[in-house]
Image 1: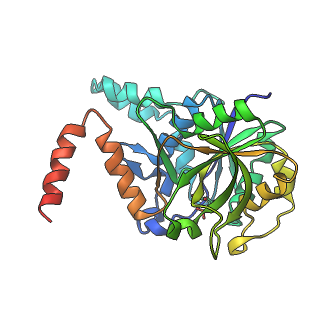
Image 2: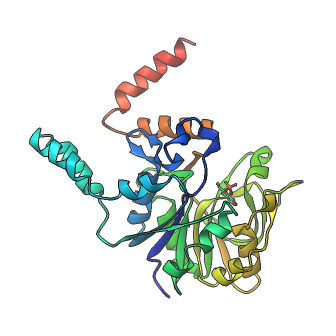
Amino acid sequence: MQRVRKAVFPVAGLGTRFLPATKSIPKEMLTVVDRPILQHVVDEACEAGIEHCIFVTGRNKAVIEDYFDTAYELEDVLQKRGKTKELQALTNDLPKPGSMSFTRQQAPLGLGHAVWCARDIVGEEPFAVVLPDMLTMAAGSKQRCLAQCIAAYEKHGGNIIAVEEVPPEETHKYGVVSVGKDYGATFEITGMVEKPKGTAPSNLIISGRYVLSPEILPILEKGQKGAGGEIQLTDAMKVLAAKQAFHGVRFDGKTYDCGSRLGFLSANIAFALANPEIAGEFRALLKSLVGSV
Ligand code: G1P
């Protein structure tokens, strides 16, 4: 079985729900507590053993590339001012040279199209897809979501999709899977539908972490349009599922949909309450704020 070494991060989206901030800042660079959303998800990928991150960017996303580079002047100033802790934090987050690639999606043609744009960098090996909108937090000392997906891949092979339970009235906003043979933490996927209009096949949504075989790429190449007139990754996975196994992973932890304002705010609260440096004071502050409204 080939190891999963590469992860694709589609980051070309416009972030219209976060205007005006996203007029000049990519939505992936908005901060959750003290780190950009994108840094949180890159940390998750590195913890899962990913060695190469592929970003599919778009117009006005150049700051993402700069973010992962050395900031010479800034480091020099921090050094001269004796800000050792801050300097250390900056250098710790720097990726290994050559471990990141950037390519562009030139038109907003859908998630499937964004993943296809990474085909030459992915090559002929299984790869992960990480949707930065979905921020995951591990339960206790457990691993984060992508590591759980890769563990499931090592067990089942084929293709893996992380899922999350949502209230039935929310399913229409996501891809939804049908459950076959159930092993508890993992299960066989027997069907998928993108943004179901009527009754959804379950309340398990596709929550933004995938391990896919490279055979998905020639299917995406065909550019078949689906829900919303876009080239959907879910539709290509459905085609691939006719010849390869797909398993779902019930992520043991919590996923925050930072693509919505409420999800983004919840992520900030949850991550602040989990941060030992500020949790105590923040909890007290939150209680007083909530108590006063
Ligand atoms: C995409 C996927 C969908 C998934 C969702 C998770 O939709 O197409 O299957 O459930 O991400 O956020 P989008 O949010 O791009 O509409």
